[in-house]
Image 1 (cartoon, each protein chain N blue to C red):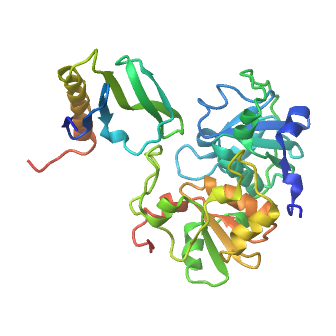
Image 2 (image 1 turned 90 degrees about the vertical axis):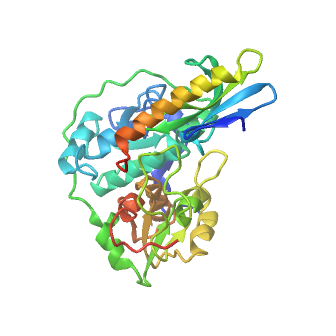
Image 3 (image 1 turned 30 degrees about the vertical axis):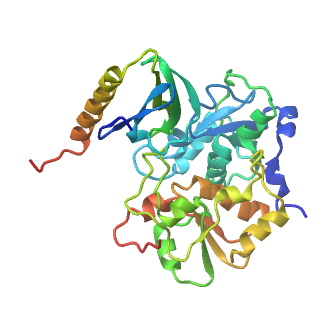
Length: 97
Length: 281
């Protein structure tokens, strides 16, 4: 484990840095293909919404060590952290402070 | 040994040779039509989308008699039309619709054994062309409440020796380790576990893993009778939202011929959310 946040892990692979979305833990990997947003290979699963419609979601991304450094991946991870923190604030605000 | 009502099943070869016509309609029932019917379906099949077409849009309930009649009309179905159902997710939702059709008294009804899974394994043809169906006038029967268990039926049945509860969910759902798999974040309940004294007989134990077709009568009998689910009992099937339990309801009622089988469509998302309901882990 190289780094972790409330909503992500960054793990050290042989040839890749692996960024994992913790909110997708337990989801079955049904496909591994390029994630168009980050343009790297990603394991993907499917989440069904209120209407039953399935949506492909990335579970973990594989960043080649030849092309990416940890700083860049941390930026992606922190962006994800910020998105989920904001979402949690909307749906389940912490009123303790 | 044959199924108790073999006429309720057709196989994929039969469907590929017997096309829909004025008296025979083919209906795909999907939980996820975007990744199912809309990508491709059997030629001539219309779509029933479980969420949109079978459920009331406001209240959590199946459609009422009037809504059912409108649905049948839209799908070109008359009172005596032969209807063949098939669908995604191992025919779970096709079985749910079979149950709703029977609830409103449609007689001539069949399921394509194996559903989309088997059709695709056999590399049979799909189309994206949707059939043009003329509206019909359909007169449904009053609901057959003998097919449906409500919350109060289940509560009353607790502790009764003549009634047996069949929980068809996965062992992890039954034990309370999870309330729903991560793929279905909208289907959780406040409590995990099962209805006291329920038997865990997962839906999948009734089908052949390789192609999703139903197991033989001998295998099905062994599957249920060995756990005390016998034809002399009142049987109530449940799962999380009532679709997998419809599948097991279909097996018990039509393939094994049990006379007293009900589907509890409220299932765990009702039982596990109600304050004060007893839960066993």
